[in-house]
Amino acid sequence: MTVCTLCGRKEAIFGRSYSGENLCGQCFCRTVEDKVRKAISKYEMLRQKDNFMVAVSGGKDSVTLLHILAKIEKVFPDVSFCAGTVDEGIRDYRDEALKIAEKNCQRLGVEHLVTSFKEMFGYELDEIVQLIKKKGEGGLTPCSYCGVLRRKALNTLARDAGVDKLVTAHSLDDVTQTMLLNVAHGDPMRIARSKPVLNVIHPKLVQRVKPLCLVPEKEVVFYAYLKGIEFQCIDCPYAQSALRNDIRDMLNRMEHKHAGTLFTVFRSMEKLQPAVEAYVTETQLNDCKLCGEPTVGDLCRPCKMLQELKVL
Ligand code: SF4
Ligand code: ZN
Ligand code: ZN
Image (cartoon, rainbow, N blue to C red; front, side, top):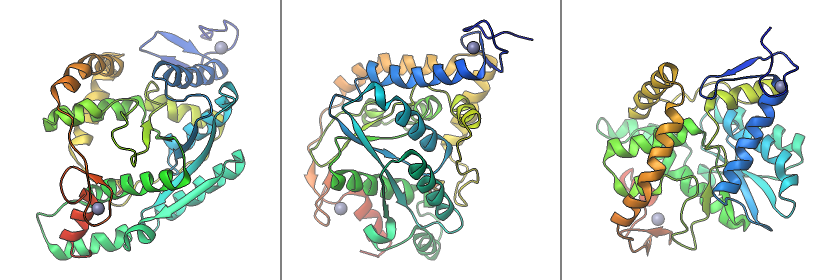
């Protein structure tokens, strides 16, 4: 039997290859919670009296983060939080996720606010997909619409709820993939912005923070398994093979061969970010002519996309 490196008493059930630790269930869970606490303190994600919303999709990362925050909320006694979900309107997928999100919120006694694409934009994602098909080849993918519209919907939900911060459940894997994806896209503005705490660039945009940024996805899943947390396991029917998937596979292969790669890439990008930020000039934000949301040009991206589908 391999004994836990930390307590030296119980049997180890998790090998953390990047640190060389072998951990029992209890020590493993404690260290995951510590990583979340550390990210919150290191990046000053939450301040006293902060009121925040956790974006909960019903998937493993968001539901697990909700449970961890409910547990460590006691460490930050003056903060309060609720959960927010966007129902994109994906039949046989999001409806199940929504129920799981609701169940977890009830279990934890967390207020749960829900909005939908239908309510906010007049169309469910399923309907948008039909319109994309009608438009024919060469258009954007369902994920492109979904990502852009969800970002706006979540921001509106959080702003209307009057919260100070919007907490998203991006794990170390997600954050690192996004960093490399932005490099692959050659987009310095996005490289400068892919940080654990986004800069406040407009009063209408709720600040986003990512307290899971120091926790590898594998550990999020194992934490959920050990704690018996219920989350949605099926994949979205529109999930597709995109550049992000190739970057994910590459990083996973490197992490497997060279333990610690994810952390190394994350830290390297962190060191480079101030230089990129200094290089990128602040853009002037205007009000979108159609919806009034902040945007670089005349129309915000969601309005432009919906207009191209001829639904605005
Ligand atoms: Fe939306 Fe694509 Fe994610 Fe499905 S896989 S929820 S369409 S972003
Ligand atoms: Zn132990
Ligand atoms: Zn707009």
